[in-house]
Image: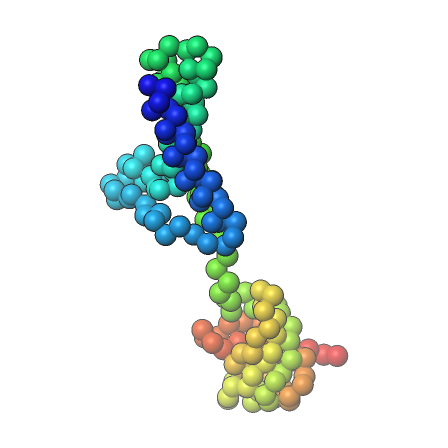
Length: 177
């Protein structure tokens, strides 16, 4: 039993250290296929190469620690199994938390309402045509099509976005300086 714990600790620990080292240098071990049953079974959905490697390492370490303290082999196996299962769920939870931290980076023009910018190309009066404006949305500098319901807005005039009129066109008004 002790040799099983030792081999699990060595193999799992080595692979876990390798995964961490590769992650630190910006790479990724591409063998991380998720075992997704698709049937809603929560246990099967958390399995991945990362979680299985962590489970093997902690299974071995938990069993070795229990045996070191003189725990009977049956109880050592129970402690090792509990440590392995805890590692699976902890690593799966951490991976899920890291996945939620990812940013999309896509600019959503519906967030432009109230933003201020400048007229880049003259905007014709009363919505009769489109001009262009430059503005900053979500921390990005953009150039967008724009219309106005009021008088024409000449190039260089400060503007405020009042609405999104189509997926690529903003409605703006002239800002009084």
